[in-house]
Length: 318
Image 1: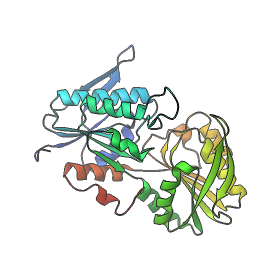
Image 2: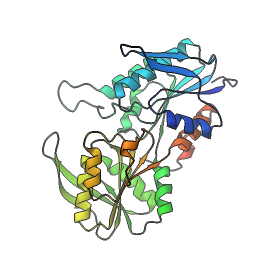
Image 3: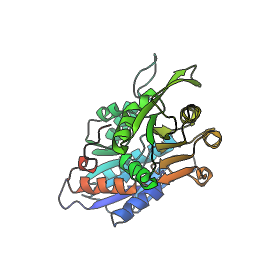
């Protein structure tokens, strides 16, 4: 990176409030850019500031609507590359299409790899993302990738709540690794909800591995979409004698019947980050939003200054 490359932030429409928070943390402003659509729906982008030789960070999670937000990201990167930006970093607080990360059935795509190829092909020199659904996605990129974790943000939140008798619960086997990291940081016990899939839409809780009786449960996961898994796990630990149940989830997609399920489930609280915008229709009393703007902002500052990003996490391993 050129030492004189000015730091610039560019935002699409996916999560502009988060981009503005990051800009405020870095004591700067968002680059002036027009990102809209033509009448027939094609994405139209124009960068209105001079970006020649600059160190540009494009803040654009590929959250719902994923296709529109992904196209905005790709076209923004292409526009910046053609405007002679010195370096372009794609900042994806949420990496969409991450669930399709392997061939688990015949004749299916590996879309997480396809999206990585698209971002690289568009002209990104680097990627900054947070709490990937699968760690191996880092290897899908042939350009440098910095992977952040929201664990510090959540741990600070729970420490302020001063919960006693805490136990961290993985709502399924896939989130055990994350739950183990949280239990270590929170100095809490660990439990796992063992589920069996009945069909593509339904799972049944078979057992709880660990003690949750008379404990304050903190359930952790990376994504909450339709909320089926979290809500079924919450019922299971509550039936097993848990005092309170709090879910901490990095990315709140919250689509379909999610909000209705959350309202009906024995969840005392759902704590999520603002990596994905949480609209007013989802701002219920149970839903608490913590910001990851300082985390992303500090990572951007360190990347720009060629400093260590891993220093943000110390000995955290997820």
